[in-house]
Length: 81
Image (cartoon, rainbow, N blue to C red; front, side, top):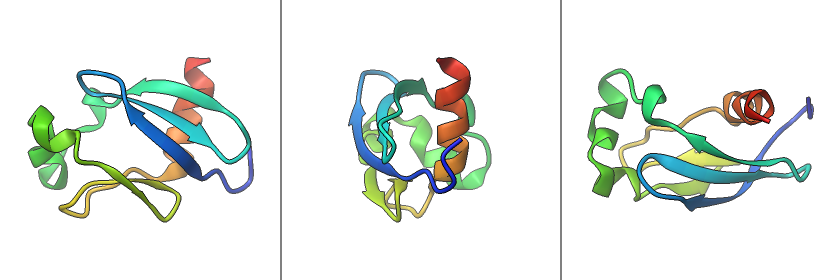
């Protein structure tokens, strides 16, 4: 595992899937539907809002402040490989 994984690129791939590329070249399309638990993630269950993500601080973030730690995304990408 990379000591400080950072997302350097992210593209929407339909539904609740985002293709992420990390600073060490690891990349994977992740289905984030099951990550959308808790009040902060409630707005993201609406696909039009989910697609409004952007990169900030080395991870994907949404306008309401919701984010997923880059380490968690990296671990999911490695597990899915």
